[in-house]
Amino acid sequence: SNSWITVSANLGLTLVATNATIQSSGGISVDGKSTQSFPGGGQTFGTIGGGGGNGGNGGNGGTNAATGGSGGVFTYDSPHAGAPGGGANGIVTGFGGGGISLSVMDTLQLDGQISANGLNITNSNAGAGSGGGVSIGARTIFGTGIISAHFGAASGLGGGGGGGAIAFFAAPNLFSGSLSAFGGGGFNFGGAGTIYLSRFTQSKFNAQVLIDNGGNRGAKTPLQFQTDVAD
Image (cartoon, helix red, strand yellow):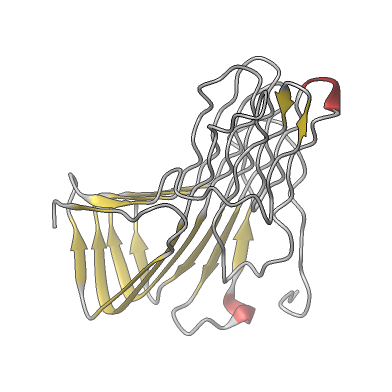
């Protein structure tokens, strides 16, 4: 379809289909749809806010007293929504990306966009929102589209939002588009988010976790490996 799908704030979006096509001018967006500060909300110190956190921690605001948020405990294959940055003078505008779950039993053709990005701030010195969570699974995925769970960017003394989390399941994976979960700019950059790649069977022994901040040094990306690590 060439249409766009979205939801109201703080409502996760779950879609299930047998086959699905997202054409180049269509997509699914939950950008800036998370206003809940737990887990991962950036802290406020006076008139300065730290960035929200999710897959990657939020960047600290100026003087480092306004700390960036941490996304808390989650598993790479079950990402959750992002979080807002800390407000400036009590005003929060950098909301986090929401959550998307798309399950396709057979084939997904993705030439459009699926995005759960945090919002850039509109009031100086506030923290930006973190990227949200995207989970996509299909027996076969192909296309040249864009999947993103990006930061929000801050200005002034505000901290950048952390990258979100993407879980991508396919067997086979014929997708030639882009997946990204970068942390955003600010007084301090937010940390890189996580991209979890696995076969449609969800066997953790076939999985990879990618951590990429687009060449920018940012806040930490907490690693939460437990029993799903194999040599």
